[in-house]
Image (cartoon, rainbow, N blue to C red; front, side):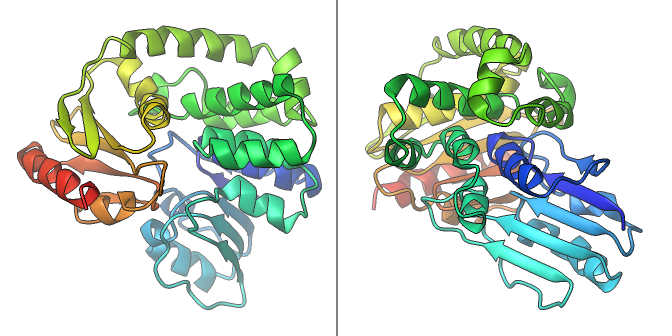
Length: 320
């Protein structure tokens, strides 16, 4: 039976798959992934029959039609995710582990299924998904030193940084190639120490964040801040880690970034206040291409004419 691994190209998707493949190796599996916002991945598998498919960290709701067809074609599908799913199809061919709790990510769902066997990777994934307090709690339960916690934090953030871009060409490295590199190492400490890829990601991250540090808020509301980024490749790469950093800096406030798409529409990222981690998905699903989870969500193509409507909804929702 052919094996196909479908995963989000960010830290969470990579760290979730790393745990599974350390536990259940599948040499030669086809890797299907892309930039973080490219979540409509299952339509790429049109025509696939009688295969073993693992799907990680992409919204079931956004892949529903393709998923139902793959199930009808008798593909055995393992699906783990923490985004809004809507109704989960009933099928003997589907094993679904979906939990949208705001203090969970897909890497932590896999960690739960594997009883913590590869928890270091789950912690790195949680750091990448901006769940710092959750990640630190797990790390301290393992008795990790502050130095080792810092290594896991940087590893997760750099893996996540690499996933952001409007297209794969924006990225430092294709996420499939990055997973292959990660999978060479049994634990993230070895990866951090020995992989030449980390130096490249570290340098790019530092340069891009230095550019982002010069940004001033586009709008400031009583309960949130909105930043508008330029049409530059560094901005395409840094948008996600930048809004995560802004959220950590002011955890009582909501945050959003606005980035121009090549077609004139806007790419929107939203982070709910870290103090309660709710509301981001509610806001973004009001718009045609919006989705995500309670703590972090986005709109892939917001028409420029709807920007002020979005801003008003943002201010109203988070001021409650």
